[in-house]
Amino acid sequence: MHDIAWITRTFEDQMHMEASAIHRFENVPNNSVFRIEAKSRPYIFKVYAKRDWPEDGKIPFVYRMLTEHDIPHAQLFVFDREDARFPNGYSIEECLPGTTADRFTLSESETLLLFEKLAALVSRIHRIGMTNFGYTGGGTPAIWTTFSEYMYDVLADNAVSLIANGLMEAADLASLNRAMYDKLKQYDVFPSVLCHGDLSAKNILVNADEITLIDWDDAQSLCWMTDIARLTFWMRLHYDGRMAAACRKAFLDCYETTHDKSVYCELEDVLHVWHGLDSLTFLTEGALRKRLKALIRDSRNRCGI
Image 1: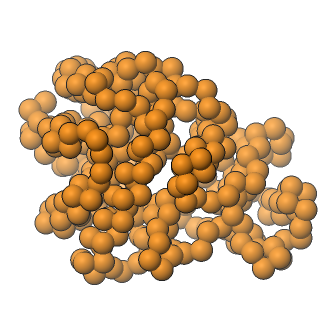
Image 2: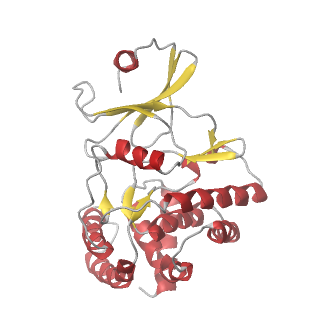
């Protein structure tokens, strides 16, 4: 449990203003997040759970890229990993007005409109070109020069966790990873762009008719299709089949790219297997894990791996 007094004092020291109220957000995975009121304005104070995630300098770098390309985002005031009181680091940024989309009860038409708006926003984000593929920290280019090189190492890392936790048999996973790697090498023809990394309703902030993406901790330099596949896999996990298909269509119809979107449709199920296995390593809820495994099986059957 984080010391509220230390958080309050750190905020006041950094922002040079007195905090009038502090409230911790409940049910936030991974990091600890607090809302602080000061001078009638709200701020977000985030205490990181891991020293190496998000990578050092990534959030300031991503926010600079968003600013340069006129993409709406919160203003970052502090990103600090040098304070001994917070060994994994912390950040302070503005608390934007609005409510995340997962907290709304939306009609079907409202939900489809939300994903149409998201498609327009993500299209703009994916125009931000990056250098190389993989993790982005402090503006330093990612280390993998092709997407397939990145995938080879990521699949190997995931395999260690999946096997150690008894979630997959080693032989089956080795065969599956080889099949995914062979298919995903087709991605090497596409450039690296800024990807949010966790497109879902919980990260879409809605304020009247405007939307903003929040929580860029998972941002990476990757092919545009990986971001979309993360979103459509999330749709399959949280909506029934008909609604997931409708939301997917609403997004893809409004997503703009100079690349051939039909290629995405050919590789989507392969990416869903990858995203599903990645989620399986940390998803512990029984019912949701069972559904996750079913979606992985379905995706494997549909793409023949």
